[in-house]
Length: 256
Image (cartoon, rainbow, N blue to C red; front, side):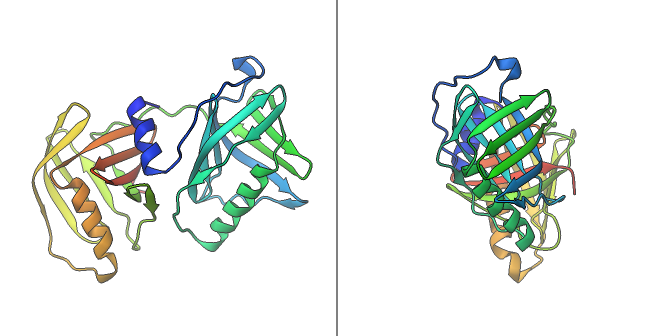
């Protein structure tokens, strides 16, 4: 993860990560990496894992975060031998289907009861008196290309708050090799031209259609406000973050 992306996500997702020393086994047998939950039990009941909403845990030294089915979460972790303690967690406030939200609340509650950890190759197990969570390592994902990738909107950022996208149709974004940019807000389409300059995109001649979608006015205005004249950007794997002032947009690679 680039330094700029870490800063962007810290602001956009409200996961203020505070460093501390990590004590434990050698790095090649440690916690660092991205892990995906593949099984879990809490108070004797299984932890739901929706196929469409994976649950992940990413550890980088004393910093921890991931996706809790619906929302992104983050905080700190302290390790002493096989003992592990998660610090207070911050989360975004997006809404998802009831089944996904139930999975999220169950997972977050289970994580609080974790006391020990063990790694066997590509498998990580977190346990406590009333919990057992099993993860598998996620191979690193190469950063997607800004240009030539079809991006799908995944979240709207306003300051420290992140909200879900709206509407039945995905909002998209694409920057092409010929210097043109196009996309949709979920309702309206837009086209223009762009130039790359020092980690930012300058946009010109942007036009959009005059279609009206009463339920999508806020999202339309938000997307166009960010894309507008231009934006800063950062890419981490298949995730793209755009920022323009206090507003931002979170995209995933692929039209989905």
